[in-house]
Length: 336
Image (cartoon, rainbow, N blue to C red; front, side, top):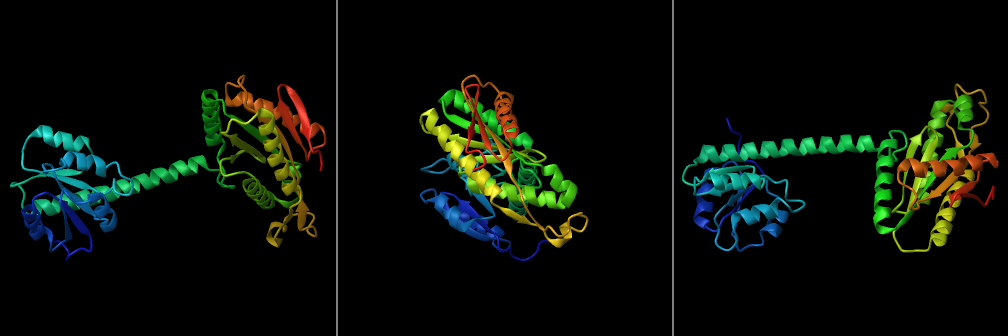
């Protein structure tokens, strides 16, 4: 048994107002009804009304219903509203055309009654809500697969995908970008002395500093453990030496920010620690930068260059930035 009138509205788009009145009489006890002729700005009308369902006439005077359907299903904010096509013809080709253009159902004029219309509307709304839930779950799953659970930055897998895309884009456009490997200095000691909760707090704090230090077009991902990868992009046709200088400055400023930040551990993090009196520690990071060039064919090539620079920076004493450029290693602002 159906409930009383819903607060949901149904929009009927038709060039014949008599058809609207007939349908409205059938469903007005269950839904609020609105009318829109083919001469109206139906997109604006739909956006303001936000109906639960749309009934759309296939044959209209000025604009064909199928064209309206195509527009509805391609307009953001509207395309997920279910659309039921109405036609006076029993031509299967018309029905197939409507369904191919993502109509949610169809009704043949003169062959429907109150129960058929209400059933079609209810079925379309239920299916639409189900599709939305499925899409939301798929988006959630996708975001979870792309995000590192602890730090909220890109996961290793998604990071690699993005860098591979940057390589392909750079080969086409000759744009330049850099990849920086970041390693927290002596991070194992933090876990061993203060515990893994404290170690997690350090990683979160480091991530926050990195995200603050990069630009909106740049991004960062966790490669594994205490290793992060920063990707700095440049879309302008700037000279390489200018890009190198800019990227080096960004990375070195991040290094300084990490080195200048004291991390205070709450008492609960220190219960298992052997040095309970030391609640505040200072951490540092070592950085290896590699710049994309035409010889790079994959993420592995670029990462290998960044890793070489990182290794040399560690050899130099850590807490510094090294740049791998044209097979040479440059050290930048060591320990400053």
